[in-house]
Image 1 (cartoon, rainbow, N blue to C red):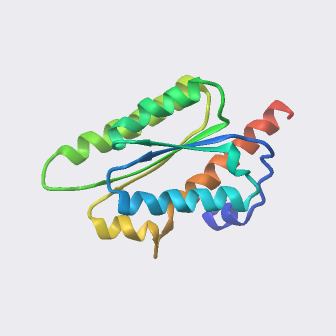
Image 2: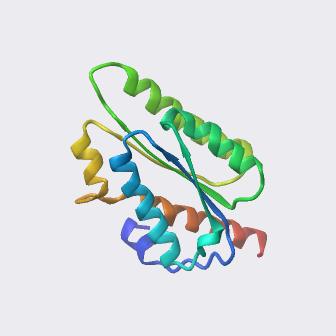
Length: 159
């Protein structure tokens, strides 16, 4: 299924609850991802009281908070949003790698969809392009993926 097909689908997720774990680092980019995710969830009928936004210092802290939220049982999906921009040191590789690994591990351990909406870009221009620029809004795409997973899982459970 093409990305466009997912964006055009209708998602009936009823009273599903979503958590957004949002990095405060690179806020000029991440705030746009958050806005895209919130607008998309609400445009598909998710009530504001079924969305919880939890800020964390940076991308490295995202998996920890995602696990706490997913393990608590109150959320049908957790959307992680952040931006790790390559610099002149190896710091980028460590943070990006551990964030991605941690998010995947949380999903496997908890059985809750954990959506990886963390940008890993070469520079700030690339990050801006993916936060509402020419490359779309990856926050919005992450919200779509979360709703898709919730709807799919409910289909398996016969809900």
